View 1: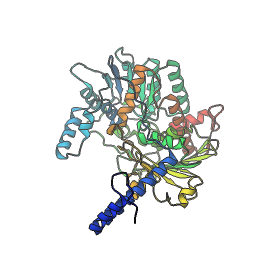
View 2 (view 1 turned 45 degrees about the vertical axis):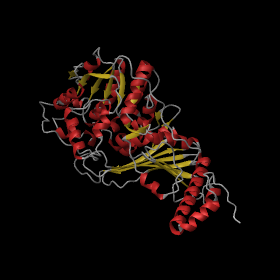
View 3 (view 1 turned 60 degrees about the vertical axis):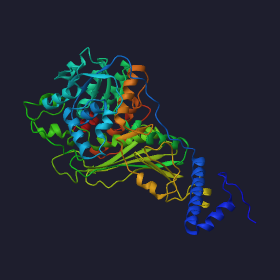
View 4 (view 1 turned 30 degrees about the horizontal axis):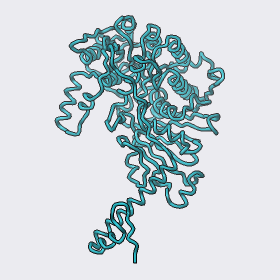
Amino acid sequence: MAENKDNGNGIGRRDLIKGLATVPVLGALWYGSLQKKAYDAGIRESILDELKVKMVEPPASGSMSGDPIRLGIIGFGIRGTQLVRASGFATPQWKESMKEGAMKNSKDTRLKDFLNQDNLNIRFTAVCDLFDVRAEDALAAVTTPDNQPKRYRHYQDLLAADDVDAVIIATPDHWHAQMAIDAAKAGKHVYVEKCMTRTIPETFALRDVVKQTGIVFQLGHQHRQTESFLTAQDIIKKNVLGHVSLIQTNTNRNSDNGAWQYTIHEKASPETIDWEQFLGNAPKIPFNAEHFFRWRKWWEYGTGLSSDLLTHEFDSINTILKMGIPSSVTSSGGVYTHKDGRDVPDVFQAVMEYPDYGDGMTFIYSATLGNQYNRTNVLMGHDGTMELGKNLTVYADSRSSRYSDMLKDGTITPDLPLYAYRPGNKGVDGVTSATAKYFAAKGLLYTYRDGKKVDSTHLHIREWLSCIRHGGQPSCHIDNGFEEAIAAHMATLSYRTGKRIEWDHATESIVDPNEEIQDRTLLG
């Protein structure tokens, strides 16, 4: 006679068999389903017990209470507008547009998400933009009944204002370093977009002045607030991948906007734009609206794919591995798709070597502005491979030493995820289904806190403000910016000279070419 052993739920095996006998088809399916769930749960626990990986949230930043922090915004173009919105202020036109979008589509939650952002207890007391239309838009966005901000036509005057504690800088690249240095000297805390500099000497000068003045400096890499990147740190710490020998990162775009072919505003003219101030240290040329709105296409103002987009990928990996500046960089590419007069490449590859990082590692960046096939970023180790974006997926390698027993007994298979993290989950998943692949898309726009979707840029600005109020270092401080800028400039130098560029870690210097060539080559 079969033993009627209780399964812990008050149902014995004999009871189950009797039940199945009375409902032969549905009962068998139900019993089979229970067995499958129990089997999968056992595998899941076995995998997680082996990996011991935890979903990691960043430490909570401090309270925003107290007197409001008074901010100035310098540059209210595409990114400046986004940064102000992530701070809690939007133009009336944007809010009306979002309201209409929500009325047409109940799943459009952009306005709701914006309104649900935490109050950062700030006031924008000053705005500065060289284009009158944008300056007026900025004033409209940040003016409140109890705050009447002032427009400044020159950023130096804004920095001299007594009612400005800190500045957000979102101008074209060729102004970043000078503005950030001047702001630090004026005692203003700085949030600046990448790349923070355009030359090697600028990079040293900005690092020096930030350290000398003690201001709070944050570089605009908001992915440092994203749970998947922080969880990836734990995966590396637990040695889930084994020795990582190769990293492949990518940029894949195939649109006018993605290729920096932005709209030229109908009101753009020498009367509405301070052209001479825009040029700054760039070569003097007559007014050119295309250069003003599409400045990323020329070396005189921008820094090309290396400093504009490679920097995103470099910092995301540096967040996880902390590998720092490479020993050498070799780059190549060309203008192969957008033959519209630009001089920065639209296809670009950079290979960074780290012979002294662990047992040695190569970091590859590959970019095209002519195809948007979704190549994911991958970290390839002896025991496993990690795909990384807003989601995170780990696969065991079929030749892994660590997982050899689990591979042999079928607990895991190389073609299915060993581990996956999906934004919004309250915990982690040991995955036994191919459906996890669905969530392997790449992205940096938002993350989650307590199950709630949050703009990661909002969190990045909040962290900066918290450090201003309470002390401490933001997650993307000046040393992180220094490493990123040097690596990006090495890539640009290699592309423009056709040479392998080496870094001397002991002396903190480019081995060759000399500084004069470095500056001339980078500046165009």
